[in-house]
Image (tube, rainbow, N blue to C red; front, side, top):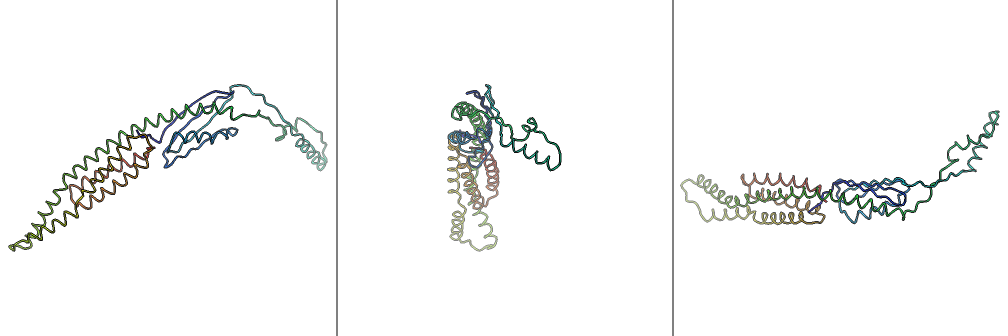
Length: 292
């Protein structure tokens, strides 16, 4: 069955003193676009996450949110920028001289200035952390994929019903088609007879005109092609491949065939069925925008 492009998934995993929480959500998109948002110190994971998801999904705009929290206390250290502290001190002394004001060095004031003191985080080994991140991503993508499959099954069921309904309309058109020529012959004969009055009707010329009209109004080829498109659409919906773009193309072809049928047949009853088919095709077109 075809998959939907919309979905949500969440996964958590612990490892190496961290807990990873990953969320995936997606909306419709013509191609596959993966947006990864991670904490700054984990930006090295972004490409790995993209490659992992590219191997599982084919279409949709997927947003990935990676959150991480420490589960074990890590040793931090404080670093002093001596040169910067001395520079602050000298600047203050110079300012005091300029203003003719007394100045005494205050170490507590100096360390409060920006960047004099900084906290150094212990170095993080991304390769060691990737295992926990990858596990959280696997859990999130599994639930995300399951949701897309469930939604895809619902869409597929609805689309198959609509294709069956379109097929019924086409059968009505096919049943009506032979009578289009018969009705034309009767109308033409009545019109000519009215114009000619008692003059004898030339049966050969009438037959030739009817044959010409029948050839021009024939919709057999269009019906055969339309039926082929319907069959391909059903096959695509029942497959496990990415079918959204293929179905979009098929709907374009179906619209082209039904427009031709309507213009060639030039019949009121067929025209009513053509309107019904075009209405259903528009609903199908809207629905397949949600398929992967």
